[in-house]
Length: 359
Image 1 (cartoon, rainbow, N blue to C red):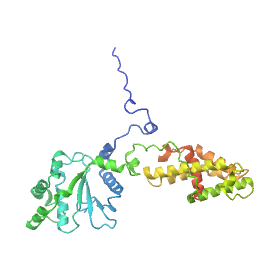
Image 2: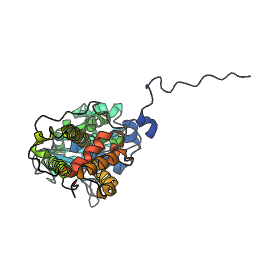
Image 3: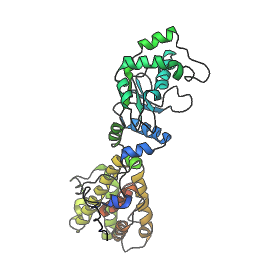
């Protein structure tokens, strides 16, 4: 009888199973995801990545397609699309790039600058999920050899392929231009560099998964002074307190004598808890995700909000309690939301004048 070896401990290297792992399964490394993207998706990823380089570029455009003149993603230093610019040439191949993959691209850039179709780019990068092989790395680091290689390969690789309407002959004038052309502009961008820079983008989770970063475990404390941005939900709470007391309340400090200050402070803590989730969403998920969450909460409490109560404070209690029980499952923030956030979103809705406690 053959003895069975013990099963490997799948958590020994990664630690205890996390909620994200339980929901999504093993993480697919970002570099692997780049390799399995379609060429079109890879171009779109490169466009999104270039947009994250906000300190470097003022305008980023996608040019890939028929008649692109050797340009895929064009990134301008200024926002007007004039002056200095960089080109990112996307090559989503099943192998590391070799010299034969790039001669035509070099030829297109040289020819279109020669004919003044566009100005010479500051840099022209090859971006490929498999990166570049050893031979091409050597050539990209040796501008004279790269130039000589293009001249040697012009007729078989470029002459009939630069345009669809004519053959581009490497005559004396054009050859002189190429000999004077700065071939150090041609470089390769490592895919790991792109991935690392893209991590700051709110689009990273939707592109690569890997879950959302953790939020701070301690909820933020509201500032002592009530800010102007809190005016609407604070007024809505004061209206609710007036409905219970059946008299006007001029100042928040008046709540101490009627024993409602603790409730008010709790509401402010929940408001700021939701504000911290809003800020978290801005940095980590695509635009509109938090707003969709607010819609989910509003939809989930509408019936409770519309019911009849002895006073408006009871409506606050019942609505907030219902919000905290809502099963938020479809939103990307569902694994980072806590009950205080859900209650706080109700106050944010009141702050946006979409929810009223006193009917």
